[in-house]
Length: 364
Image (cartoon, rainbow, N blue to C red; front, side, top):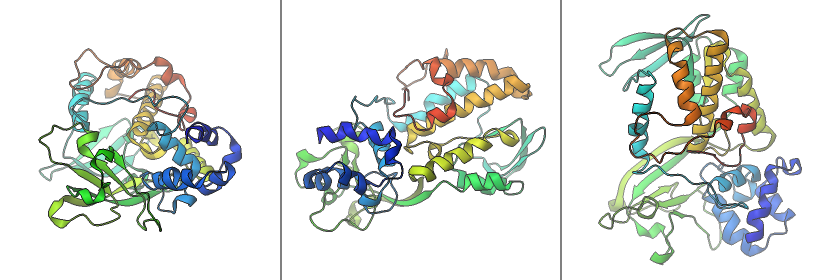
């Protein structure tokens, strides 16, 4: 297992393995039954960005990228960072930074159309009190999934843009928050933060399936009862233990040539018609860190565009402040709950195409 964890990195650097499945690679490395059935295949089943396929048929490159960023495989430990207080502190922590840079933050505002004109962008919105408005700006950066953004620009989209935005795949997943330990191992001391299924017999028909143990993952206090989040439950939690039961849609790894072509197609339309695109779907693996990195790349390109063409009107006065913010990863304001880490300025000097498949994030 130790040798496999290091060797599998080769699928990301050697084009020999382009388009290979997990099963084909396991045959290539002559994996033992124990390695296949107790580690690789069941853990692949618990990797949520993977497509709804049998684990043997999943793309090996997408799987290894996901495992690398979580420290499951790799020759060096994963560079892990956390936000003190949990993910609900993101907005609280970033809001003062954005406002210090001159941002106008509008909450509870639904965007229903974006019209890209020659010299401006019109954003058509409805506010929380159901009042309509047209916001005029210099550019637009879409940070939602491409398929969700497409209807917003449907009135003036072009074939190349539509083709690029529909190339990325999405997948529906059921997410249940519950208190039922029946979805965990029988031995409590074996409960991990992430728990996957190693079946004795047939593989679960629902894929991918994984249970997060929030008490351990979030280091919750002892007075909090055991709480679990199961993605695509392989068995139904007891109804009386269910806290919430819903669905979400998330990006799914394409892998191989198709994945590279999808990313290349979006690169070609970046910045066209005063429009930029960012999100985890652009980068593999499709996780929060990838969304952050893609947004950083888009911000660099956008600021470069403003400086080169003097294209920004009201926003131009804030360009220097934003550049300083992006280059240093901090501001003069204290950001509650965030571990301060300076962002290497060289991070922004790498061409965007080279960052699309970075092995692991430099900073979160």
